[in-house]
Length: 339
Image 1 (cartoon, rainbow, N blue to C red):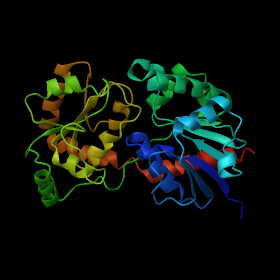
Image 2 (image 1 turned 135 degrees about the vertical axis):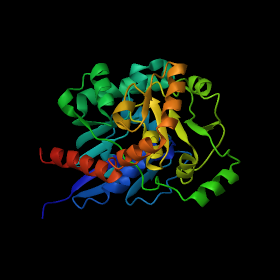
Image 3 (image 1 turned 30 degrees about the horizontal axis):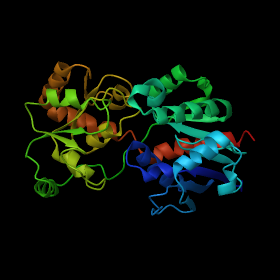
Image 4 (image 1 turned 45 degrees about the vertical axis):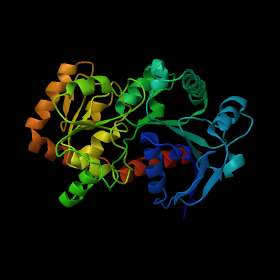
């Protein structure tokens, strides 16, 4: 039997909320199911000790900023110092350590590079510094959408043959919810019987000002502003809402689109960046810079209720973390065969 590939994977992003953390957690968990891989995980966080269930985690109580200096600037210490010998190393989107192994990384978006005004100067400088290393040393880049791949080709010198698109997935928890559970959830959080939902966020990218204006004739509940729920309860929030208004100005992928669809919730989303690609024909697409377009999109979606719900349920089934892990493992194996 062929020897297993030893793969190191930086899972430090699990310490943070958001799409990158969801990706990291679910990909890591599903990669463990591949019998051809021997996974070892690198985790660093000063404030959040690792408390997950992944096996073979090498955890360090050190801040990511220290590793950013060590791996992106000083660059005299290889990742093998922390994980042992590796065949493949899959880095996070923050640090790019030197390694003797074949190297893979994932780009979720290129916001600091394409829209630096939406990020702090520190984050922009980190990503610019890391990109130079990626361009010189990386063997394969995973982009989470065709839109992100296109953006990468615009802002970097990475050759197209080194970029592979692998879509993210939908966790099994996102599904049709029981009516009695929805009613209990609404009472718990004092939610109205009928409401639209939006996703909160820092800065202008989530386009909340226009979304609020477009939704002024409806009850609008903004996750992170009007209500705070755990990820375990998030499916109930989606299922309680009539519609998700996800009219962002830019997204590298857009997990909430699929999560809402999987819960049977209507979706209005933007006609820019990755959002049309992920939504397919299962959402109403709008111009995010136009309040009127968003408002009309809400009316149209509510009018097409049953049709869009069915399309959304089918669309969400096309994306799974198991599929994401299989395609990622194939990247590892193809690089391993090139030894």
